[in-house]
Image (cartoon, rainbow, N blue to C red; front, side, top):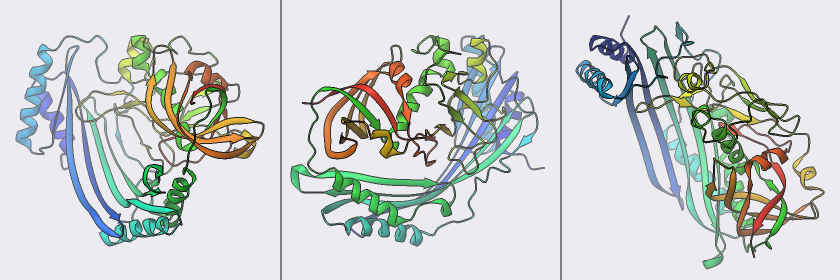
Length: 443
């Protein structure tokens, strides 16, 4: 059997005195094409390989990486890592995951590889079509360009305890960015889609139309009066709230005591009936994987069920710190040790359509874009720049910009009302989310 780079590097680590070790290999291949005003401006092909090694000597651990794939480099890298591990301070929580799988593992059944491989001409044609559609709308005056691309990422992971796993994932994407209006009143917006399989990717016509319509809708924005409003986060930005939730229940942050939710395990933090689910086994999922970055089984998990926080996000190290087993959420690159993270995360849809969600709002704000960030993870205090549209008598009204939306995440989570418009387009997804009583700074 041919020895893989991962297995060769693990063998080198053992030769140089490592008690335990793990190694990860990542290969990225991609092609992309950018069209601006009908002219190709960027044609790119790239391929990169990287290999990371983590070694343990007692309770000391060191991580090193390389992009050179030959036996001599593996030997040098292992020697360097083992020498580093002798002088690094001890970490009582260091070690391989106890619950790592001890078999060969792949992504069978997850359907993560697309057989379509578009040519550069195909990519150029797709980008050109998206831009042409966007520019065909009256009032669209310029373009930042449209792009199309595809790629493949291959991952292999092995440990000295006997685990070895490998899988690949493909990705296809199309985007367009255009401007509406003239001079100082000009507004920009975009549309972007990606999918594991080309057949699941929406057409360039849809992308171009959405970019144009969004840019035109933003023309001549005003500013709302400063006050307290009901706010609806559009699905394009609502996932950011899940991002803050993920940060607050990350096991590493809980172990450090640096999260405003550190005392919330087993408690109600969302409204009754709401579920936040992470599913690394989602078919054709943007972040699906058969195992985590420590070789542990990647299984679906309710982080929140019926509004109650069920678990922290844990890798083996944060689990040991908290006296809990890992729940298979380790993630890593080649140059860093594992840390807890999510895969395909979503807030379950509610029962109200987007129209019904705002129907009783006499004056509120639909947020479609967020800028900057001032979020204090110790206290949950939240403040972000935003733009979007006024809601008047349940209807979407004039555009608004240059406003700040503020509150406290703990309170915001407790008041979230999800709409029914959930779509799975990214690795983190949420439907429209309504939150009443938000502070808005405007005029």
